[in-house]
Image (cartoon, rainbow, N blue to C red; front, side, top):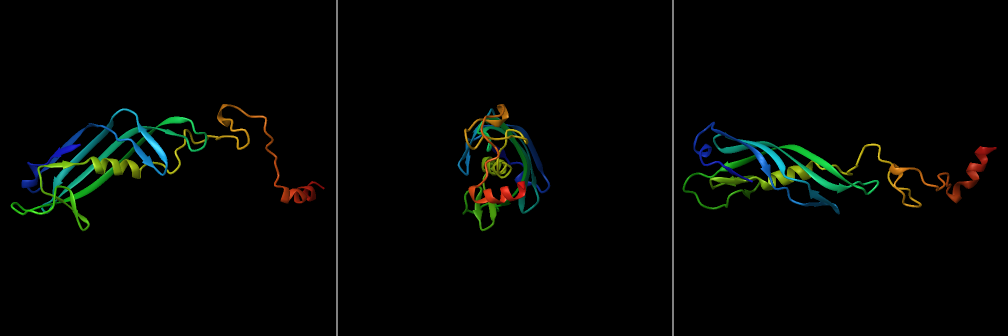
Length: 173
């Protein structure tokens, strides 16, 4: 997603706002694949603070992902805010490419700002550690593999570790 900052980078206090949709990338995080469902939404505002462009915004996207407990695919909506600062390169000064990092700073030298990396990293940062299809997901039976959300299975649930069998007998007296 490209943001035109040609007008605001020359005037202190100038702002530009933009909102719309963008093409979501497919993500893979810690072995889990997040497949995009439709387009992502964004809202962004860039302000010239004198030495830098302060870019603040919000991004949202939906992904198809397997539940961590029951392994059923479901749609997960992810949204988050971001803020990034791009140092303005004085006119006539050459060196870094657009958006290139100089130490901790990102330097802007062109008239367009590619915000796709910020959008993507914001979504990744707001992904849950363990995606669940619902909060009360009961998962799979460890013996037969049946999805417990669809009903009970015939497996025994009172299995006792053989090393603790004597302790169970003691408390049953």
